[in-house]
Amino acid sequence: MAALDGLQFGIFDQNDHGPYPLAEQYEARLRLVELYDEIGFRTYHMSEHHATPLNLACSPSVFLAAIAQRTRRLRFGALVYVLPAHHPLRLAEEICMLDHLSRGRVEVGIGRGASPHELAYFGIDPDAAPAMYVEAYGVIMQALTQTEVNFSGKHYRFANVPVDLKPFQQPHPPLWYAVPVPEGAAWPAQNGINVVCGGPLSRVREITDRYRAEWAAAGRPTDQLPLLGINRFVLAADSDREAMALGRRAWPVFYRSFMKLWKLHGTQPRNIRLPEDFDTLVENGGAIAGSPGTISDKVARLTAEGGTNYFISQFSFGDLREDEVQNSVRIFAKEMGIEPPVA
Image (tube, rainbow, N blue to C red; front, side, top):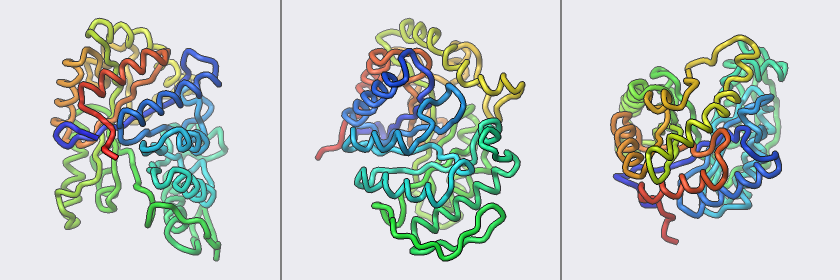
């Protein structure tokens, strides 16, 4: 893939409720993923959510298994697997299976989950989720890298569990972590884990600066940084006016899906506040919408000022049709110089 000044490009997808019946939505999304593969994007990242129209592909491993069979170069993975909602031994097995089905194209995002309401629906105490996440991560890493799992924690206990399945990528697939605040960059930097950042650009820069500082303090070479990603909604069209009109139509549909559970429970999401209107989202830098020239200028500014080396686009959201998303993707890829690697 040809990247601008070393910048790499990925995709993020919530797979939120769109304009099609569910079976058609899955098929349309898979065709989009085939396009990402054909064009030369690096990685397709998908979220995990439950009991909400924010994500209708609520079992990441199932959807990723389909992607493994529909693509040839594209890397893919959950961003993130909500570890408290999974049995860690079972999830480790799924990761290994996906890695072999794709001949080593899986990337694994890990997290505790952004919504306490979704965890509670699964019978999980949201206050226990951070500790469950830490323990589950330890179990999964044992399962991926050792022949036997032995673990004794508050939430998980395993003794002499034999492990026959090992990942295609050794010692394990690349890991990802979503970092909402600067202090959260220390652990992934110390462990060589890729990160993605959302939120205001100033906070993104604080996170990437902290990551680089922790990376250097660990004695790691500065020219071998993992991927430091910034995630933004992207809508490209032939003109700024057309792109903004599409965004104004699609955004309220996505916003309702995003906020449904929070409004149902009378709460607000942690660490993220999305505006109700698309114009404000663009003004705040949470979305890029416009013609090719507008898109390229904004991507260059966001990545330079944010200190990132990986730009993750969320092209599909709300009631955008498949053809509208494909057009946006093709315009963006052409303007950014994205192309598949030479065989």
